[in-house]
Image (cartoon, rainbow, N blue to C red; front, side, top):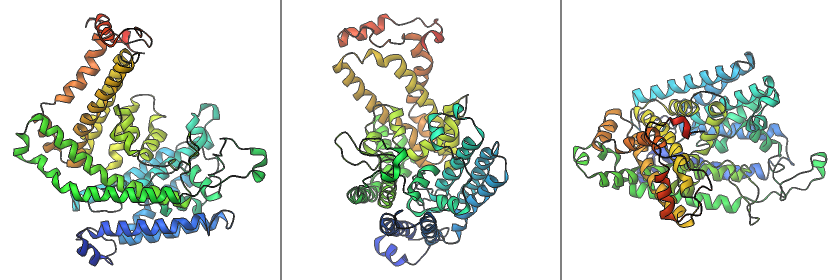
Length: 508
């Protein structure tokens, strides 16, 4: 019930032996439920109206360090080491170039830890500071310090007219103090499993301004903020719901994962199964693995909410929403009708970070570079790079197909429903097809399985990217909208272009 590489506390080894759960996972559970209880102090005893910001910073930092040492032992020094090096760069280098240097330093530090882990504990899913099995603390800290560096760069060196709406909102216009910086990097509510919260949002939480940005009518009188009454809704109900749901996810993962072992994908017998069987098995394996992430992210989300983090206004019925920093939207991911929708619902904090530091800042190949950074951030297992390379390919393919054919199906409710169901099913197949390598980790077993599946979806993706836009004319919204479902399909075929036509005629 323990791992020789794991350096966390062995205090609850007896509980691990009793339950059959590894001690690193027992420690994670205990630390998260302790954090859930302590988070309420932020809303009550340490409310901004009752104490100062320094006290709130100190409380979050000290508890974070204690939890880090409890879970990782001497490895916890890396939790302070990475942000310390980056802070030196932030304070000593010019803001013109500092953000790139911070990104390089943080990724080099994280990469060294990843490589060390692979050398001495290859393929293990025990929990260490990199958090191989979840979006762990050192990975989240990397997101925090790099996003802060880019926010400082935006606030101190760039003109406001050159900033995107997102960059303008998160721009930081003064250097953080050491207490502010390390409290932001190591605060305990989001330490173990995220989500990655941007610096402005964290400072608004510490200073008691997070509820000021969203009121019942969506506005606030900035000239008379002291006289504005803002109701702070209680997160107790939603915290309880998320904690219970997280435990249900943990139960499903523990109960059913042994029925679909990932190691079976390497067996010769599996390669002889039918293509249908392989797709079903891949879907079950990857879906069950996701429940581990659902558990960690939902529980972390509950901790943040209990501290007062994550209020997101009101829905159309006037009910409180506590999903501003949520890492996962389970229903949207599992039943998304296209690849983009599913990807946006998965690890949403990381998606925001990737958009902040890469996607919005590069001119050439933003999708490819975004996936490349995501792969590097995760580590160096070959399976990761297969997943993200395939992700880039299938994202381009899905975008091309959507632009080309979707509008042929949107003018008729019946045909639109059929289209949505078909794309939902296809998205599930694609997600299983490209993400099993992320779980399998190894290169050759993954490639061998792809070959035994005849690279079927890869071929479909190539056809979607290179051939479909040349054969089918891109639909115009409203074009043939009055036709029946059968008539719209016939209309699409009549509009088909010859293969000799230029692709540029069919793309914006």
